[in-house]
Image (cartoon, rainbow, N blue to C red; front, side):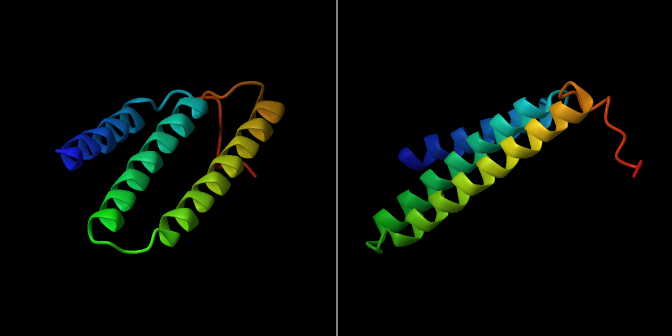
Length: 94
């Protein structure tokens, strides 16, 4: 039963990620929601088969680093462009 809720958690995060393409901050938050769902799946898998939980600790460390990198990119984009709308960015320009 827990696995059903974890899959629903993950797919709702995926739906939010696909539908929130307007703001960069909303995409980062939904990406963290996805990562949390993946962490719960990995934790449930390791716990159910009796494996050690060191991999889940390493996974959450990488998730924190990914979140910090995303926030630093968000801050630099807001400083250079003034907002976090995807429509105002021109990625083809050097």
